[in-house]
Image (tube, rainbow, N blue to C red; front, side, top):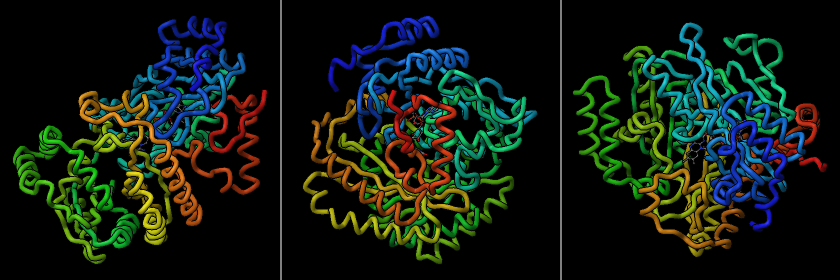
Length: 530
Ligand SMILES: Cc1cc2nc3c(=O)[nH]c(=O)nc-3n(C[C@H](O)[C@H](O)[C@H](O)COP(=O)(O)OP(=O)(O)OC[C@H]3O[C@@H](n4cnc5c(N)ncnc54)[C@H](O)[C@@H]3O)c2cc1C
């Protein structure tokens, strides 16, 4: 990145922002600009001119009004745990809006079953506050939830905890308080947030918008009582296609609240990364999650006995979590899943990983790099249940065609699979390749883990090959009519819209952000020239 870009911060704006949020919360140092200038996958076109971190709705609205009056692009950033170019600058002199200080839980109302948070609150913090009350949100976080924010999750949408029953993060939204590009405030829902629907669904317009329509400032989510009973089951399948047929049937049956499946490649990576210290922490967490100390001790013993040898080397393991109001209901769901799995040629294996996923939902984000310090980047498609096996077969065949080039470049691949309510399967191919890490890795991973990994040199040739392979996978996603979370600047959203939808989206953008300042280029909305 050219050094001269760091000197472009317009000082009158900087002084105004400092008067709004305090001088310590306006940053122009190289490290802060570098951190905001790249996500986990790539750098933006430019470094940001400065980073501003408001702490309240009023500070946010005044900051956005000032930046907008100066005519500069604005890039909201939650925890920066994404990899589709969503928050990186797409134009010179971008101001990066750091939402991390807006991390408060504003109100928990068990009597009305809603919780209101500032958009920079993490999923881990929200769950820690709700757990003692026996409450949670229906969708309750992505695996990155230790750091990733609820505002980021609603802007990109999320898979994982609770998604098997309740779908994605936005399906829990009751109301949003938005700050628009000119600094004005838009509130969705009723006068006091307790129920989402009152006329057209304005909240829905901002969910999955990747920040192009406005900045989420405050978010009210629906609460539910945390289910009293849990169950776990894991199965291994001889092929990915058989596993996907079973997962589709589990989804149709609506029996598992979470699922997580891997291919043999990803299983190997996960096993390499796990450490003895990690095992001890994991055992403690799994034991603590069980209803009695006897059940806890038995679970820990089961893990120790099973070690890591319980997954066949070439199998496709599927891990399922179940929850419900009665133990008998959960047992019935587990039994139904077992019948489905066996009918597709699955075998029952130790349910250790399913238990660990629930016991430690938000682990440190050390999987942002591979076990030998390699870079990591996933790409995903949500596909109709019936089409998942065929789509997986096509991706595999593309990777088989690239195998020689992958091997020469040191690139390895794996897959993660999950389901979304009763409607979709997510197939997520992931790439590992030798390449230098970014500031976001240093900031997001545990220092002790990072210190054990080698520092790799820049390797643009390997990255170019990963880019080429990602493009081929995107073509397959398009062919199968996939939808995507985290659209950012990666997924071909615009190309998949009919003319009327696109005209509506452009008109909405022109109304809410007439200067085209918010995340220009994201979702395929072209930056306006000023
Ligand atoms: C190790 C790891 C595990 C992951 N696991 C999962 C998983 O299980 N499920 C899953 O779905 N994803 C997962 N992710 C992807 C990612 O973490 C999620 O998409 C997460 O929701 C991003 O949140 P964030 O706060 O980091 O958002 P950011 O990356 O900071 O931003 C994402 C987008 O939202 C916009 N944005 C952020 N905050 C606001 C706001 N307040 N108002 C308007 N726009 C805003 C940004 O401009 C950007 O376009 C994982 C990532 C990692 C690194």
